[in-house]
Image (cartoon, rainbow, N blue to C red):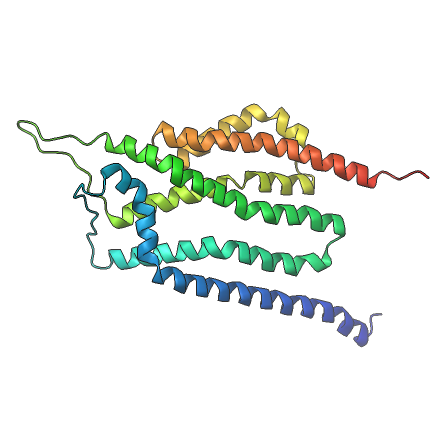
Length: 262
């Protein structure tokens, strides 16, 4: 029979873990609150930064404008931008807190594996977001603006007057789509670590993966081939890189488990 003292001892580690978890969550919430406040103060410069690909196409002296059609639209747009910006800048700091919470209970080889995944997560997200901003936005905006038409006899000109909320929504959607899609290697490495998949199974199902990758790219991007190819192609390369990386880590794990002979 379990004594009262044994129950107290078993509860103590659980309570310590819960207190540590609460501490880490409060730190993450505090970091997010600070990042949100700073992001809101700089919401206008951030929005100008996101508009630069469109301004570069129009030219600085084009006389173009962006509009909002509701009294609260511009305010809510700034709040949305501040929220997304705070998430973006808080992610690496939150991962550090997750690492500090998990690391004491892990073996040395497990720490090395998760350290790699935590390091890859923000790096891959930033690379994906940068690809969207510096490559996809200029090409996609140029394509969409090619449908503008000048005034001719008997017709009116067709010109873009973008709403601030719609433009920001499209930009955030693309940045998140590219950033999250670039996390594919992290997801596959985690699944491989749990034994759900192997490098051989990924290689064997490559043809299905290609179809799925470009199908997802078509769903999360605007209806133009430029964005779809720009997203699908690097994701396919990351898929192949994940297969190579899983095989590399498996070989290292096998060598580490191999007994040494004197």
